[in-house]
Image (cartoon, rainbow over all chains, first blue to last red; front, side, top):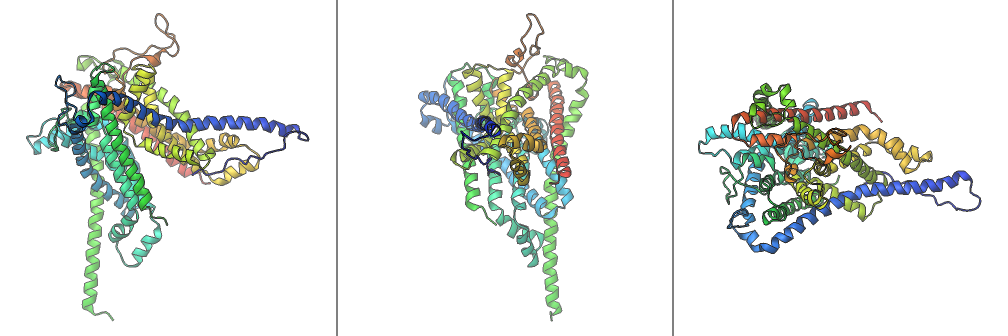
Length: 317
Length: 308
């Protein structure tokens, strides 16, 4: 990936017969090495961050799993870590995460794909130049603002349609989350579609295909790996989204896959605990690290899947 | 020769295909409209509720139990200070890492690990960074729930954004610039500092602004490190107060930031606080939009002016 080779290091015969100007270069070389080392440290720092994340989560979760057996964590159907009768069934939080993410993806994947196809194959240059920055803006709105919007704007509208809908529900949070994810899916899919070589399109048009036929039967198959990894990124965003759910979905842990009920997700549970003042080192404090470790493993799995898909299905032209 | 019946059949097929084309184009515009309308509804709804609340006092008052007297003074001061720490930590680190990966890194497994790792970091949810900061900065390093902890947390969060932007900006510089510089006998660092960094500065700036815009709106990691939601004082100014505060005492002060203030007001049941939340949200969206807009403008100017 590095665009250029580093400067050719000419090994000069140090010693006799070297002019003063060349001798200075030797010290210059030392300075170069020091700078290179410092820059390397900066780049390697990112590895340190990853190691630190894993270390912190595993260390605190370790203490947690010494008290709570892993089987309880995985198979218990209640999540009540702050009650006297404590249960630690991560399944409950997972159900909230899965339900809200599913609602979000039902919105984001079709809309994002259609927008990407439209911008890449149908829209004129002008519209694309306006729409892409606009999508970026949409993705730049702070998620707390989306949460406010879901709670105070969308939920009342949904309640007019379903009068039984509680004030906090996974549906409204999920829908707004879907709109939040559209830019990620659309922008990455569009990049993948634009990378498909023009000659494929020209071939298709030359055979008399329309734009839609070209888009669906030529461009989309050729861009599959990029589109798939855009979807994966969307899923990973949905799973990790926090504030929309913390604001609009209520924070009651409940084992349900019904989006019209309130629910807690892994992320909103962490926020809930952090807002209270649990003493450092208590079991309640450690639950958020165990929950965070679960979340990290999930997103890591999605990232790896996306990486594998890109490698496996990449079309090389 | 085509029979006229065949011709009609072909025309019918073409007409049908064109109708589908039209239909899909319409679908595309409708889908775009969903995004546009949501954003408009969000912005207009917040403006209608919040803008009447925006007066001078709102910016100069501390939060209060009475909604009508509450303001965002401590929140915006906190946001500015946290952003300062974030920028000071993330920009040098991110740019240095980007420069290393583009200009220095040899092709070996260490570089591969660093690259995979950076793209992986970009995919980690922000709340996990909050947990890292809680374990590492707040308790292990003992920074407490301070501006320093929050600023460093957000710096880690936007580091991948800045690294990727730096690399892209550097990659846009033609190879001939490198070669010319090396041909004149410059070392790698001289090439980087005299040519690569100046020419890529606008691109890097775009990335930094986008990263900062993201950091301003981040709520979850800062809540996770345990930022307080009710702060009715400002961090100590350098050399002010009695006894005089040190130059950097403010970085260890407790704080609140705009999104947390908004979250606090949103989660209260009284309608008057919802209005405050709308006003704070409006300011927040305005700030992020202004920053994103600035980044888009810088990039647009860049594309227009530079022709290698």
